[in-house]
Length: 125
Image 1 (cartoon, rainbow, N blue to C red):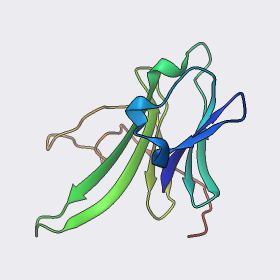
Image 2: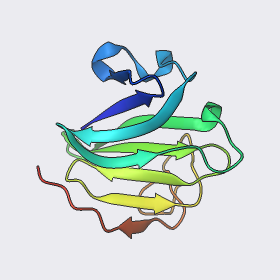
Image 3: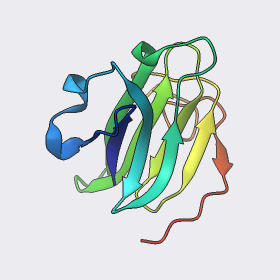
Image 4: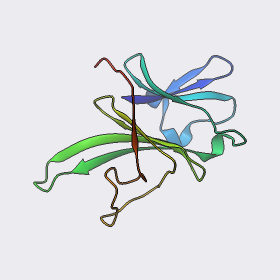
């Protein structure tokens, strides 16, 4: 799964074009999470906001045995929310807020979220 930025002029950029931090925000129409060419999630700014609040993170969990655990994509709007957690299996969870970091004191099931709610999303992997 990867991110894709769609611009008003028809241009499309992906992770292969450079890091998210270098993605131009000017003229952005939609920010998407895709698996191959299948659209998993699309987001636009909340009413009254612009693209400056968009946040995207790829987080990897480490298991206690030292092996890598689940990888999650986090897409959200800071500080207003909403935020989305996308699993590599295509599961999508939504929360009203976005946390840019989380440590071992987090007491919610998906770390960076407050009370995540599963969304009914179908993906073909």
